Image 1 (cartoon, one colour):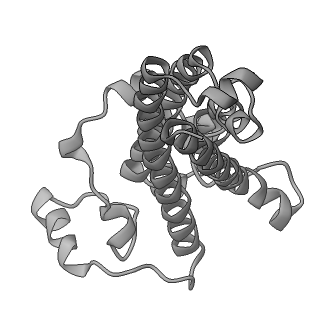
Image 2 (cartoon, rainbow, N blue to C red; image 1 turned 180 degrees about the vertical axis):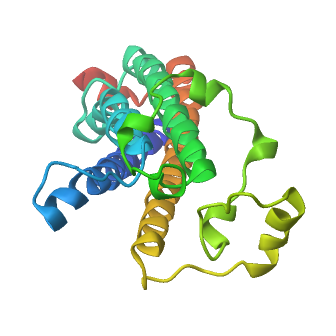
Length: 226
């Protein structure tokens, strides 16, 4: 096995693990209300779990590249020049999915859970549009909703009073429903963000390795087997 084949095989295992983690993380907020209240998602934690960043971005879009990479362990289609090139092309889909997962996670971390933005705590206030992701500005990103005593901004306060709230930052605990939803939202989407980063790195590395394998070739013994 050449270094290209070895890395492709290892890459497939890592992507498979990240794929499962991403799907599970995305599925947890979708099912939490069903478990606790025995109803079909009456009060979702956030708008952004319904964008399925873990199920689609970090999950379904990673399956083709993962399957192709794992084939290298069984002397499959990745053990020839064409297979290595195909693995590079399929990992381009992985990169797109990882970027999607990253964008949704960053937007979710920036805005916070529904309880911080909507009095009704309902997805009726959600705007499911790609414009929400493309309009994101890095300078506007902050985690004030997580560290403040309350994530609901006071009404009728001047800007200076709102800015003074930074001095009251604290780590939320589980003493209230608001704090529980903030902690849960932060944990889920920070984890999805990390999954997206890792999948992006593995996808980009496999694109490079795949092209190298296509140019330099694979081991002669395996090529004959394939």
